[in-house]
Length: 425
Image 1: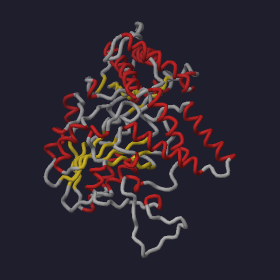
Image 2 (image 1 turned 120 degrees about the vertical axis):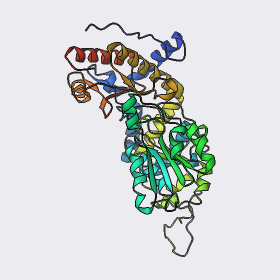
Image 3 (image 1 turned 90 degrees about the vertical axis):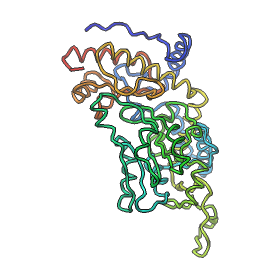
Image 4 (image 1 turned 60 degrees about the horizontal axis):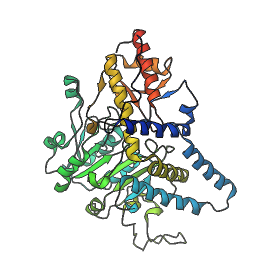
C-alpha cells in the first residue's frame, strides 16, 4: 500500500486555514520542551491519556526544588507558598469559586473516596453509575454495599456491542435508574477507554435540583480542554495532575462546590490530618477536652505531608498551561490531530470508535477498532515504535500539546505497513 500525503495544513474543525496554521506553528515551537519526542525520531508517543512524557518545565521545577532542599536551611516555607500558588492556579484552571474549594490529594482515587466517604446515607439508598465507569470510582461505591448502599450500574456495554455504536452519556441514560432513594450519580466527564465526552452539565441540571449529588472524575479533561466547573454544576470533582497537567504522579485535586459542601453538613474527612484542623495549636499539643474545628471548606480533606515536589511542579506547569499554551488553543490543536487521524483511518478502512461529533468526544483520544488489537499492539510497540494503549475496545491513541501532524503522518504510515503485512484492520 502506498501512502498518500496527509493534509497537514488542514484546518481545525472550527476556524479557518489561518487558524490551523497558527496553531501548528505555535505548538511546534513548544515541542522542544519534550525531549523524548523532539530528539528521538524513532519514538511516536501517542499515550497522553495514560501519562505524557515529562517536559522541561517540570524538569526545571523539580531541579529548583532539589536545589532548595540541598542548599537552603529552611526551604519549607517557600514550598508552602508554592502549594498555595498551585491551589490558586488549579482553581483558576477549572474556574472554581475560590481556591478554598480545592484540596490536594494523592490522586483521583483519594479525591473520589474522600467525597464518597463523607456522604451520609441510609440502608436502601442508592447511587447510579454506568457499567464502564472507571474502576477507581466504581470500587469506591461498591465497597459501601455491605453498609446498605445499593450501587446501580446502568448497562451500556451490551447495547454498544449489539449496535456497534458508543455514544456519550447524558441525563436520559441515568433517568430510568434514578428514584427518590438515589443519593448520587457518578460519572467521568471524559471516559478513559473510549474517549466519549459525557454531558456532565446536563446530568447536573437534571439531578442536582433533586438533592442528588453529581460526582465527576475529570482526570481526562483537566489540562486537555477548558473547564468551567461552575457551569458544569457538579457537587464535586476529582482529578489527577499527572495527565493533562503533566505533573509527576502522586498529586491530585478534589473540588467540592460550596453548595454541596453545605449539603454534606459539616463532613468529617475519612482520614483526619492535622492539616484539616483550623484550631491546631502552634505547640502541636492536642487537648482531648477541646472541640475539633475543621477548616470550613474543602481544605479539611488535605493531608500535612503531601508531595511538595508535586505542588512545586504543579504550580510551574499549570501557570505555563494557562498563560502560554492557553487551554482553548490546546483543545483546538488536539481536536485537529484526532480529527486528522480519524479521517485517515476512514481512508484505510479502520473503524474509529466513539462519537464523531466534536461536542461528544474527547479532543485528545482516538480509539481504533482494530480486529486483533493484541497483535496490533505488539506490532505498533515493536517494529512500529508507537507508544499506544491496547484496551478492551481496540488501540487507543492519545495526543498531548507536544504532538504534531508529523506524528499523525508517521503513525498512519505504520498502520499502512501493518495492513500490508497482513494484520487485519
